[in-house]
Length: 324
Image (cartoon, rainbow, N blue to C red; front, side):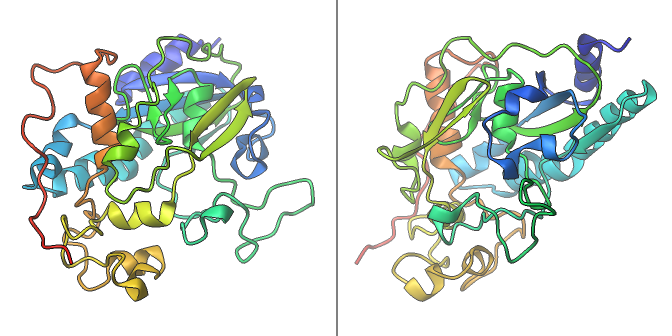
């Protein structure tokens, strides 16, 4: 009989950095549009894998010298190359043992949830312009799994105030993928280790777009646990991530240019000048939700993945741009 430990060890050998298993009943309480039980009603467990974002891919953004490494090796390469390959291999292992499995890498370009950030109050709700449920008691296709909730359910860590998933090994430095299967694998316990997010609000303070509020949150209860994170302004997040501040990108649309700033995400990101590296739009580079959080957790000694030198060794770069 296939054992949970065998599956986890195989996933690690294929390229995952952390692996956890959660039972499907732990999704009770999650929004229907994010609930994988509607994808595979007979599934018993979900295998969730984390793939590290190499700390060094953030170096060039920190220093203002080299942006493509994070975009390619810390983002696109993980989502579009590494995750699918590992999902395929682990899925094949499960199928060879006789268990049906659904691989779900974190690269799907489709969702029928409103996620563009144009109307933050509608984010996560079903978009009726794209598809309709087959019956009133079901979500619309395609169900879009909330990967951070999946990782929590699988015992890999917790969701921080920035909504980034935090693991005790890497903090916010991982991207997630999952496999739903009818294999009866023993689930891991929900994470009950040292608290990672202490609500220091460094993520909010260092977000150049002020997209992470300190006084407004989203709460959800799954697996008998209440989860809470900041109510992110996704419109501002999507623009400032690309450098909507004049201190990071004078060619990018900013709030002074309301006509451009209010455009849909893709159009706003390419307004005035296209992204230099196509996928490489991270000129501001997740300064709050990844870098500031990582620095705080490392300084507290909370992470297992340690380094010989601190990450921040000089002042983070920014342009000396005149403000009017």
